[in-house]
Length: 311
Image (cartoon, rainbow, N blue to C red; front, side):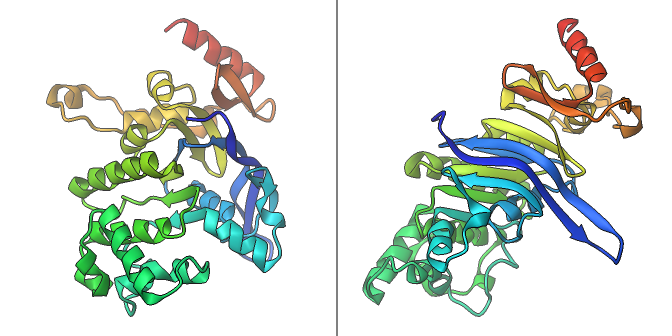
């Protein structure tokens, strides 16, 4: 994995008006970066702002404030159709629902080749057909599937079609927005393993958004934990599991079941209570260990450091 930053998110905010005087701070000033070839996991409960973060990065939403730099260029400053077209080719998205994200009236060939046609990557139907068949085989499907419709496939197969569609334009960066949450557990591992293989073969970089910490650990190099629009902790995958600092991260980890009856009988769930936090000052994102960041006040920072030393 390179140390070169492919994506930089700086103080990103995404606010939505829900009434005349009401505003929801879906993403409230988060900062992180993703290195080339890395998988960055973004986790948290439903409604924490992780999917909104992904959609704002790829410009499905215009940011309320902050910067998103991709290869050093500000994503939200791109205005011309040419610039947007180039950007859209470099960054693609795999959506959560493999049922809703595929047009039921289009064949698999039409779905996958849409990007090829928009970006002029094939010159005729013969080349288009060959490319679609190649992509289908790349994601573990048969080339004969090209002329079928989405309703003829299982959930796992549809998600593979979604992955093939994203790969068609040869992107550098893929945002996977809860790509396995709608699938059976037995299929989830297959899709994640496929994504890991494709990453090695094509040099891809991923933002992997999920609420299942166990699966995120398996695929991610680093993990960011979100709570109510804020990034509360960020660390390497192993480090986050071994030394969780923020009480919310501890709460999420305590909820992960293991296939061990003895462990499950004694497993204690940690309930997160935001009211226990120090309110004497505004919390800041601080580095508590090398490359391990936590949102906390000065008082909490000292307490967290003492807790780590006493482990």
